[in-house]
Length: 437
Image (cartoon, rainbow, N blue to C red; front, side, top):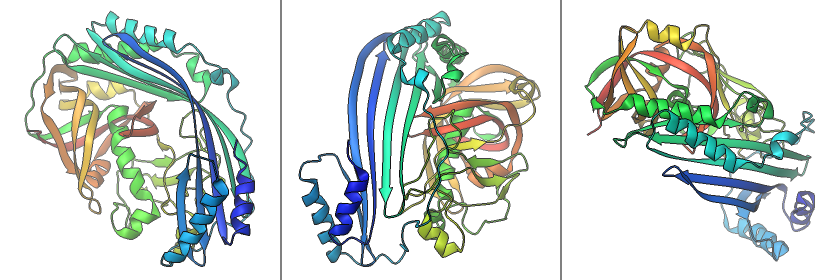
């Protein structure tokens, strides 16, 4: 275990002006399965020391995983700052003394050790729904985290479970389901069998998809799919991206970028999600931040330096160089997803997407490729599945055309495509659909 307070004191004694040292020690269990069989079961330890140093208005940061001769490595970093230009955007770490929420990690979830059984249940659930092959992964992570700066010291322990299942039908087309939690109480009603069934249902419903057609369609986005759109958008709420002009939030404070049905938070205080954070990289206590309220931009994400530039306070989202979101949460609506589907005259239901790319970050022009289930709806009924389409649209237009939001939310996460998020089903009017070939 690295003593971060000692690291800070050493760096200061060597000439540093300000220091942030974060040490993360992770106990990771992983199981991976494919072709309806478990491939691996791993249990391994990982650790890293993230260190940030400022000296004479010059800054440097790095990650250290080899702790031998650490004093010499710190000395080399400090010496290296002499060769760097001044960082005029950095005004200093947050010097205010912090108080932190009480956080007692979930002991029941921490001691979870039946990943092989959970794998088996997911496979059985998907096969029950007709899946011919089942693949996926489970991660169980226990993190011990400590941070020290010139001004604050804190420790925390986070426990998380991430689960992803992909089922393939006899034609090789897939359905997917995913889940994440840091709260064992969410497991009381959770059975991996049901997650496998959800993926299997989508795969069976896909069958042999038809080539999709171009046009404008009302689209019901599954939480996995809309979670991906949120993931790519919420990162642009960072003051760093706003300053560079590469953001749909640039010059949008107190202006509308969505319909009244669109309210979005960054909420790292919500302990049920794996995006929970007690403190940011400056040691600032995190809090819930309202980004968009009823379509109106209310805040952007700040560290201490960007907050100083904007004449406001840090939101607890450092990234010392670039503020970052922790856990997007979209406010739910009032109607069930079944009710929403029943009123769709002609539209699409899209389960998932990937390869989201922006052609214009400031204006929000983007494209993304749906996957794991694209279903055409007529008069409230799914009549066929599609393939070979792309969503080619504008993110502000998507948010502005949100027509309905379900009263159900899901805890979704999928690699880098969907960060830990809590998202409802979302119906968007007049989405532009093009061919993906």
